[in-house]
Image (cartoon, rainbow, N blue to C red; front, side, top):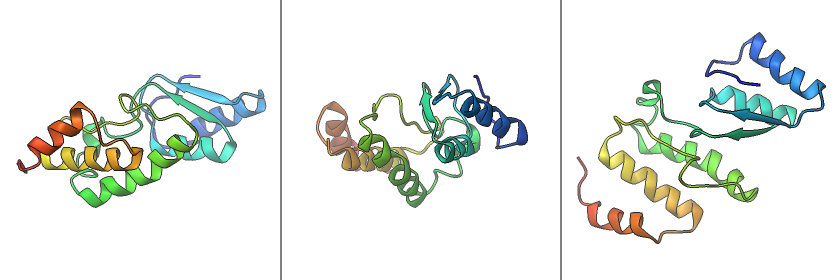
Length: 135
């Protein structure tokens, strides 16, 4: 079932309930879904297989991620459950809008590295070298 990025509505909720009634256990997303979809799927016990980042690629998100505290809340809400289930792939499970300021992007990546317990590698070297640039 393909579900577009829309807020929870009767149609979306009915679609997820239909999957559950058909004894389905997984919803595969080819596009970024509205966060309410993940919450509803979780309540129904459905696994969501998402090929696109879980948050942050739409221009509507720019304001949400202008504050490091908002990023912390989002990362801490989503990354630990993914890690607990062995399903975190740093290249595809996250993202920020292309208009995100550099200092916010660095904060995002630092928090991601802290939570994943893997502050090594090429990107970490970039973070330590670029950390002084807060533009």
